[in-house]
Length: 273
Image (tube, rainbow, N blue to C red; front, side):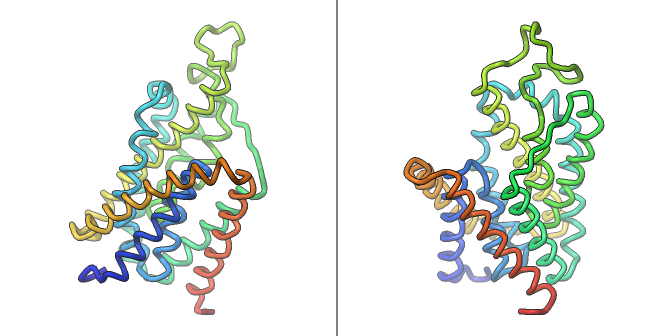
């Protein structure tokens, strides 16, 4: 990105426009799509630095403006702490890794994430297991996100498996509990808000790790702001597409493209392309 060549800034704008369309269409995927596309022509650490500002700015509303904030922080605090630590540590380590390793890790995570999503696999985690599993999932997600800037594995499948109808952590569902949220919309909103908070925390850890190694220069602000603007435009377009196209069809197209992109990156890391 040295010198901010016009072609590079236009490419960044196009990447985040595509990522915004995906996020607007299916509710997530901006970091995953954007990092995968940018890593085609730049080092993963450089792409991750540009990614941080758009991801934070497009997730603030999703994370903090919702009724479930207190519930999420109470139930997932250990996951979030471990996520922050893991992301920061991994970002410090990957800064010293060679490009082939970073490409291989990123490509592998793209394939795993898209493959799991396409499989339709669903999990259910009992509330009593959350205190044990949450920090493990948080640390694993942090290590992966710090190394690849992909914030979804294994956090997203785990969050989707949680029963947000349980109003308080550490107890099983009780139909007579007045704090139990029974409305399906509230449960879905809590999940969406938890995803936003998770991405913000992972982004903060990634920023700290990259910054501590000098891989987050002030120069990333310009492409970051451009990416933010085009991502927001893409999100509006994605919502319109969602209303006109089958959500499942759109989702499968995106996930299939991520698998292809992942295969290209893995083959490049292995020296096959």
